Image (cartoon, rainbow, N blue to C red):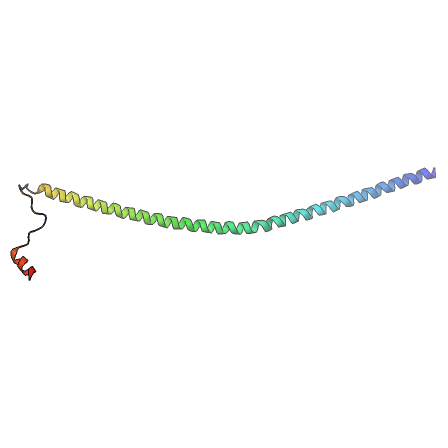
Length: 127
């Protein structure tokens, strides 16, 4: 029976050794997995930082373009407002002129568009 006990002890010792090796393998794989995860995280951060910088610059460019567009649109609006004011003034002047013409008594002959030069002034101008 001694050889059977020795064989069983060897089998138990081998199983214990396999258990220890299996436990050591699990610990190694867990550490390796953590190391790979840290490497992936580090690489991701290394790739994201330049992108974040570019996005920040792009954001600044977009804000500047928006400000420039707002300034341009404000200038256009001011110009349109000025044109509108000029048109309102021209319409008011035209309406006043039309009212003045309507209030004048109608004459048979219309006045000449330009005043005729007087003879004395014509002689002085020709000298």
